[in-house]
Length: 309
Figure (cartoon, rainbow, N blue to C red):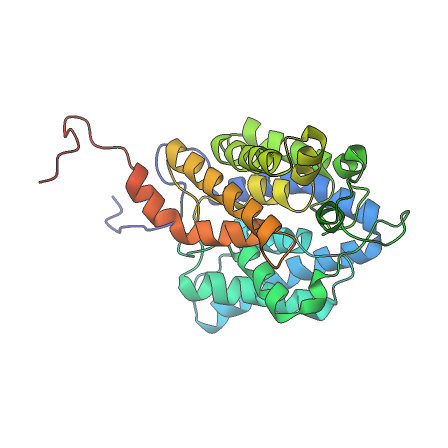
């Protein structure tokens, strides 16, 4: 019998799933959005995706090599981080900036905190916020190849103009590589739900709160509220990043609370903040709040009655 105590990232016991198999499912679920991004934005989008994934994997490999730690690139978590970061960037972002963001995500946010399972915040979303603050040019969105460059949907909505709902659903608008095509993101989300990689509570609470809160702020104009909901990185963030096992609550109630509060923060930043998009900042803030949400929503052991000793 092996007498050693093995400590690893979730999933642990009572599951046939491994970290690698879960990460592979996430990669598969992100492929529709990645493919749609390349079709819409061209080879420059593919270059950004390849750059982010390659630099992320290389960063983790070199970090483990220098510190003489066990190599973890085989669990595919670095691939997921690189792919998620790329899908959150515009296709016209300089590749060196994409590379810096990837190194920041893997080394600073993930590896320096102990690797997968120990990071306090989502590496991809934190790297996006870092790049937005460090490189102002990253805020300039790319536009599909068959459209004329103009304002992004969120900027148009803020100015009182409502983009076509069909264009928003199919991704024929400006924005980041993987955030514009809602159809592709929904396909990936349904795949993750069917594979039981994620639960519905957090994404539905997040997206639903943004829609309902926006609906109230725009005078209960259903079409305008739906346009706000389909714009920006809401679906990409709610489905693929807010649901990260490490940085999201463990209970259904906690997930629901996380989603509602993230939705409120997103709308507040969109309507009253200095940035047109609030999804990244909302998820980052809620990642920090996750330990407290877990504590407040933890299931009490049967028979204790919640009485403190």
